[in-house]
Image (cartoon, rainbow, N blue to C red):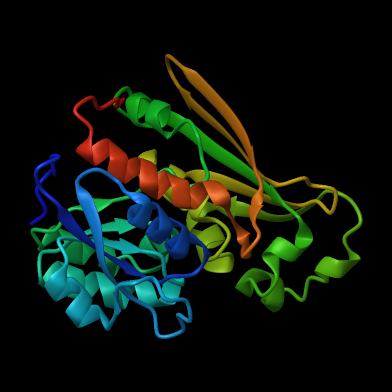
Length: 268
């Protein structure tokens, strides 16, 4: 079980998946985050030399106190099962996987592991968590990206949507967060995170827009309770290495790590 680090201790971190997000987190750890050290990574496709061991999941979990997940959604259950069986703490950035594969959260309940979900490309999650204490009546997120950001999404393929033919801002999906996660597992972690922080996947409404003129990836949430209405809008530049994600996603993991090691913690 991971303990909260201080400046005299070093928590060993392993990163599973070193694509656009994982590599950005690795670089931040190599540059230095108080209380943490990058011990190893696991990615068979990794070509860059990060100066640490590149190994399998089992070795990663044996060596590390905390694992950061930066994987395609379909691989997340495999890592989660191994982490929970060894009572290893884990940070999930692929929150959509927690909706698509509900057994992950069921297995977490029988483990001594702790699971952390960063805010990702969203803002306002702290307010959502506070509102949940009072009771949330409704939650909605509208996400907008350039059409190319949705390439190869299952929903796009199954419905034979010609993304190249979209010439203006177009609503391409409307439904709940669970259906959105299944249809856009690499695009809609923001909706999954909102649903997990708020009123659940079935009740969280999702709109997905494709806009060829979009300057970046935009997410707007509206959450209502009897006492408060929260609206939040953020526009992030797409990650050059992965237009399905935003640069902010990796930095939300870094912020989570820094928050763990800070003496001053700001929370809802």
